[in-house]
Image 1 (cartoon, rainbow over the protein chains, first blue to last red):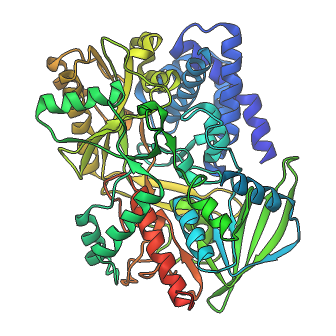
Image 2: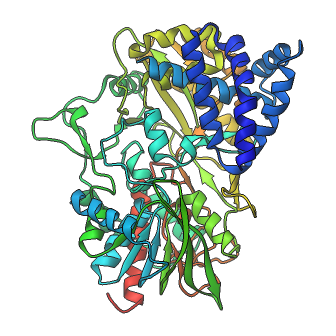
Image 3: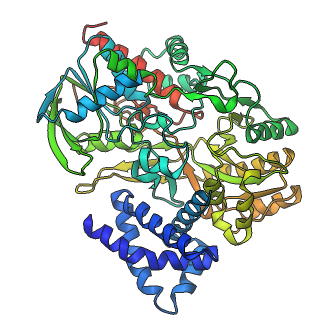
Length: 105
Length: 497
């Protein structure tokens, strides 16, 4: 459990930042950082098995977004909503917009 | 009353004895658990209620906010049934359970639903008269009433749209108390923390918050001990046991079957999860429509029970969330969120899901499969809802699925219908039931007509899990009516009635 949360903390931020860049456009740095923290927090409190699945995907995607393939894969996942990967992108995107628009007041 | 509840909760937190005992252990404090505890305590039973969540004083967090999700929802509200598509769901996890966080809309169980349950699942002594007499009692206890004066703008829009199409629409009453000169926004929710839990406390029930039941120890078909884990504010956890004569499990349609499975009970348990899946859209109107912390009370029942329309909470975060699948084309409308309201099309699904407790995992694994008919109904539901909202004066409609077009007139509806795919939609639900269905037909039921789990002598279930299938209406009224009926049967059976 602790290992999964640690892995989420390290792997989700780069992926979330890329999803924000591709799907949501410009957010100021403070807003983006708060939203990413919120995404990590929420994913860390998910039920055990989905959290393990999200963690595995995050670890793979965190490596992928460091390569030139990262952006095209995420863009494709966002557009085509393939099982799991599409759900992951939708979840991250939904958490980010909820947080940003609720906390903007 | 709530001061007594807080005092009893504080006493419960201080009581760290390794073994407690009682006549009846009630697990869960929501619509099923609170009513069960109140009736049993008032009948003279020594009752302990355990609740995994914490106590949040009613009204201390904004309704439908992220702060509320942290405080009162299980897993921060990020829970989902795995399938194609994934279906997001939420469960309350706090003193008072789902009644502290839900819409507060009330419906009696419909007559045809009671008939279906009685005949289809062979539920004995399940007469309409008894259920409706209990419904009368509930409606008084939780102050079920229509809103005073006009409903909110988002609700009025829905009603206007339905009337413009000649469709049946009505106002769902709510369990709210309104001051004599108050309006629609002045209601005070009559959740379990304000109604049945104070009654239970007054009759002597003890309530333990932050207490999770790991499993029940059962031997020879009789449960006698619950092994519990109690969390402290400093994050430390202690394990202890609670002894009882009878146990009533009221953890809701996901947690109840999971606990029974962890306790070694599996017969027809967790195999028939039912729900009301919904798809959503946002509609922008010419004037201010949205009220952040309230919900429309009108519901469109023209196509019920298969399909119903209603309104959702529409604060800025939730409006933005409803547009997030198409942020590049819809997102700018979020800046104008006061003019935008979120609506849903809900179906009574024919699909079923499973709740499976996995050894070593704290939470159960939940799956759900929509049928072809469900998919068709969700698709036509979104189109019909859009048609209705155009009739209500919506300037633009933003359907909740990937690659949806913006709807500005009737000519766009065909395009919307053609492009819709459930697999690309955000599907969610807040109504979960039927994971321990009740009835005398033990080939398909997990508990008998009183909620006694088959194969046991003293393990009862008394929550949404018992509903044989999804009722097609807001289920809290049905859950409470069944819970009160079953609690009275238990009281009689144990010689206290």
